[in-house]
Length: 189
Image (cartoon, rainbow, N blue to C red):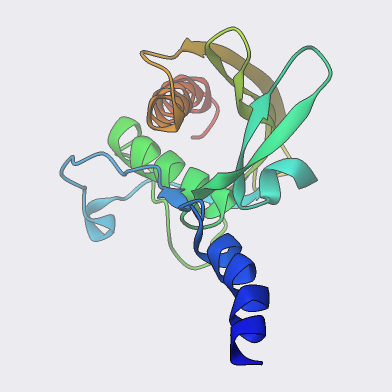
């Protein structure tokens, strides 16, 4: 009886122990640049009000575009924390560096508040070895001003694999944040 039980359980135990895929978690790292204290900033307040992602990018798996119409989410390569929070943190870090005259945090009741909304349409790897970063932004001013723009960038991967993809996505996002700062600077006064 015991032998029969072992013969029955052994294959199941082997299947359960066999090469479980290891989950790999990836995070976009913040630049290591000195931050300007918010208390030293005297200009208008810019609040990143929202950053919206399509449903497929709001998942834990890193997105990869297989061809012109097929997207897949990685099962073992995942974002360490929600992607929208990582993108906002990187954006704020770049804006702090590029727009030192602006307050990027502060009381919401100020009359000088500008609100920035971002809509990310693509943030994924692509079959041709490129990282794709695309979307649009809308800036709303305290007197009802409204400005908007689009962004689109292809960033080549330096190597195969998810580490190279995440680094290329980060590099492309920081470049887009830098370009956005240049577009926002003359608008916010």
